[in-house]
Length: 355
Ligand SMILES: Cc1cc2nc3c(=O)[nH]c(=O)nc-3n(C[C@H](O)[C@H](O)[C@H](O)COP(=O)(O)O)c2cc1C
Image (cartoon, rainbow, N blue to C red; front, top):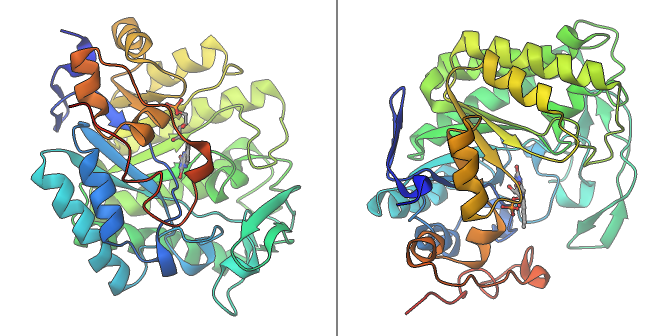
């Protein structure tokens, strides 16, 4: 049997297999509230050992994209409960990805009076989709004040508490792909002169404090984080490669001290081997590896020893019975890119399963 299909157990995290469904924004949360259709979608994919949900806003300022869910009010908590119940009935675990979009967003996607915020007042190049005016330039965000930083951290803490109330087994902080947490790490986006900017330790402080406070509120075993070292997604300009390496060297060691459940790496070809090795050396708990894996390469990655678990995105998107297809060596459906972010069931819950 393939390693990925075997049960997983490490430091109290037990899963029915080594296969993780990667977080994927699908924009079906009309009014930013999780609904029955989303519960059906996740339940269809609950053959995974662990599901990580789509990016979910911890606070109204984090709703940069149209129709993404939140976890900051009671209606959203109750909406998510339908998903966690449905997934648990099928024996999978489920973590909620907390995604604060930061400077990536638009006022047309935010509630009236809610500001677009960032580490600094540096606007992202490029455009973003809005339901009302279609593609729009990213506006300039407002730089968080010292008090604003504390409120943002508190937002993550409350969101994590809400996630536990909604029945999630834990939360994943989205520290990847150019959203707020990663915006703090990048010296081209973060030009703060206070203790949250200016050097590696200061730029990492927002993440470390958020992890510490979330872990002490809900338990370190319920906290994971996603990183995408060396990625420039979200108009993050590349910075000195030694500094990038040292940033993740520092973070992996700090997060190991806190003792969180996992680090999830969204890999890309620019990550040097030494960064993988350093993260593995520094962080003893679970590491999840994602991006471009096939069941075969994922199996190899598990044997090589960097990854404890492997995650798949588009495979799960297009194949509700992804795990069964691996077991049967069946062919996979191909994803329909046109319906990734559309508002309804088409291209969402209607992918075929094997007979
Ligand atoms: C439609 C879509 C939405 C995504 N949304 C998110 C997201 O909300 N959070 C995140 O961390 N990654 C997101 N990703 C990235 C995936 O988690 C994953 O890293 C990527 O699909 C590569 O893995 P794959 O080759 O197995 O598809 C998204 C990917 C896709 C295809």
